[in-house]
Image 1 (cartoon, rainbow, N blue to C red):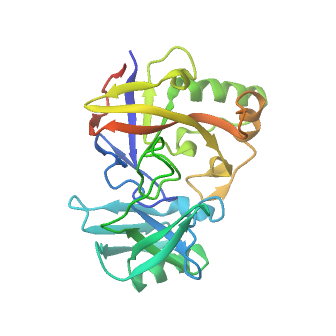
Image 2 (cartoon, helix red, strand yellow):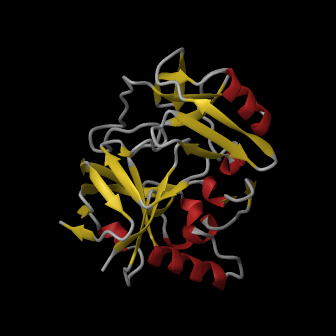
Length: 269
């Protein structure tokens, strides 16, 4: 039986995640997931671990009512912000294909993050009238790259790490893949590739496409430093996709919102 072993929320795109035991799943994914992001002050282009690996050691925590956001990092005084649901807006850009407006979270957050990350950045939040989707198939999203959810499996990671060890390298943790849902219980690795329509808890979900992986997977999430060439080197041996790149896990859209808990069974169909 395939069940949920881990659920993760990433309040700020590109920063550390928070484990959940229960998640409310909206059409845009886990409630509050990637609803904040750091953008370059000069032009509003989003920052990620691709260019700013130190973001991995920024630990965001939302209050129960999501009206306060705490940002913490090693050797840095934590910052507690009153979340601005509305206020001054800033034009932002994600992957050169989407531009829109987001709510700026103020100078205090900008100063804290700019000092930590070593470049002038602003913290923004999705606006109340936020609307974004790559297309209808991908589903509506917050600041995620293209789909509401990312799903991986324990058996696939075990297979990948066995291959990495055979190369004489160290295994990688699941955190490198920054998934929202981790499934355990499949005997066959990469069973997630064959999913199409499925239910977890009371949420109905569907496969969108393979999850193409980038150099973020080579960032040590605990230190914020590059730790390549794994896992991309090994994935390139056997997980190349026809459209380019290597994949691990799948991207998922939400057919019907609901609630998911750790331990819930994944039911196909």
